[in-house]
Length: 206
View 1: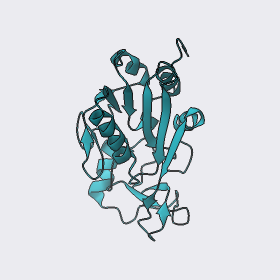
View 2: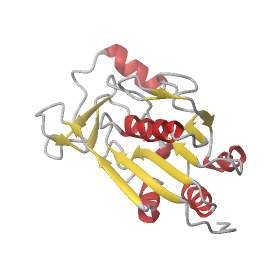
View 3: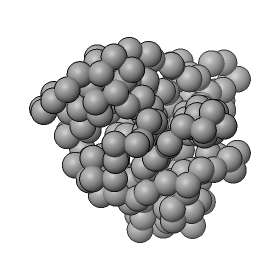
């Protein structure tokens, strides 16, 4: 990691949680507030995430903000000029192992970096590189969804199709928010429509 010049105005914020917990919504809210304050903002999203829009970061409730699509975290510094004050990054779990170093470098340069992503995969395992981001962040927000089985606070993401790939991009046709008691990674997808299962095999996860 290249530290370069340290600036005490930079820091790292991480927003994490399950699907449908409002991570992207919170990221968009913070970025919009920075723009209202007339700060220079640049936002990024993984190229793989094209569920709601090719370019914008879009929350499940259709809030959105303009972003740059990238394949890998190593592309981010090339878009962050010396005038950029705030960087937002959505779906961080898809951007590879270099992301923590990139975020540290930007924060050390004086940039406010806001990351959002899943902290657990569909098996309930830590979803890299989120654990590394959480370890070095100054501020952490854990968002909770509502369990779609019992209505209790949910921090797990239940896949409801039969795909076993770790990365499968989708929304309510592929995933449900579940609490720890209703979450079951071995649950068979007997009630999933054939169309949803087919979409799962062809494409994309969150």
